Image (cartoon, rainbow, N blue to C red; front, side, top):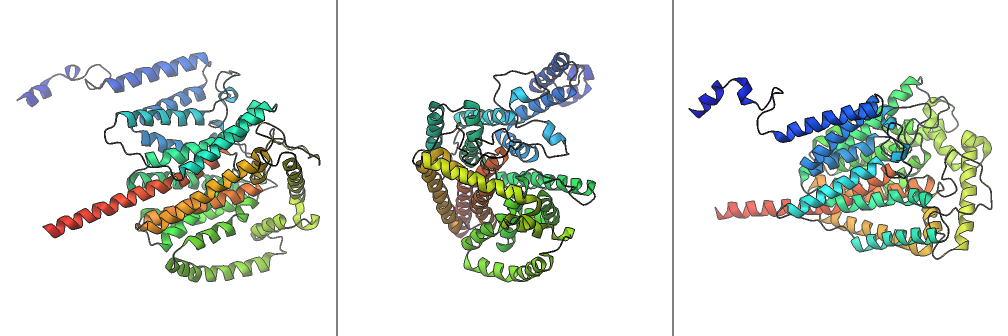
Length: 516
């Protein structure tokens, strides 16, 4: 009866306004009003800057989704980090760079200039997620907190980093360079601690992996389009991707290998098989020698981690591939063909001969001189380092390059750490990584779910991959690298918790069935 009466009411009585918003849905109306006023105000203040208005709409959507479900905001955060560009790629100006997600607010062209605004959208986004998560934990009943893996070693490492910042500034170091040096490491620490608290079910885990797969594949496709646009050539451009993108693409290849070896039944395995060629092409378009250098050490660590059954399967599967690669390298070692590009890239990294190294000769020479300078700097402060914010010595004067922090951050960021933090900080760094590797390997052995086991293997070897790459190129100070690495390494306790809970659920079902 009441239902019939409601249906007979005229439309104007069943809705709170002519907008057609159902009565009681005040939140939706409030968001619409705020959004409309916000966009209008921004258009007026910025004299019709559409990009700023779109950015405000995007910010509103992100904030709303994060408040509604904090994990949704987290997935968006990871997607943004992997899709947007931190640095300019020569001859290309994509929308993924124009968003300026990694620039300080004072440097973003579509925002008002405020000289003190040395925070960036990434930091504000991450801080917002942390605040919302903390509020959720405070008010949610039966909230579960995963233990952060090897937290003692992690805390010791970051205490060492903070001490080196303070020490460096006391020695007369510059604050802004010090901030640029360490902020990526703190992103890593935040993700390492936050991810286990956000990812607590297998559904959460699968969504996160899908976000990573789609975002990294997008970067591979972006590189392929550029390669085609240049007529299937590079035209003298060093890379068609961000420096870190090939590192990300290789992690997906390792994940695919792990999913296949453990026979994990998931759509992600099929998706990665279908996406393998675009990922390989994107890796090739990246033209990063550091990414190539990391392949063998990373796969070696992966091989050592595997149980004997999977290890033997990998050997059998890899044998034909190794024969093919041996023939390929032998045939194209002295070739100038486009097909020989990967071989030529490897040759230039191995050779100090000017003729063999070609246009990479001066890059190799620069790095060798840079390492000499780093070694000379270490001798001046071997125990506690020179601190962050201070320039390293240059007994061999380096030629100018287009990097404003060249005198603070060298290419070899593994040696950079000992220069800045000394033997004490360097020990804490390796102690933390070693503890993580041992803990990750221990969890890997105990996991029963093949899918979780494959992801655990990826998380452990991703650390090896990143360290090798960082030895050759600036990678420990790149924001995207550290967020992604912290995410993967932070999955270890989540995997352990999910597997344990699933095992207990299965045992309870068996017990109930037996009692019945």
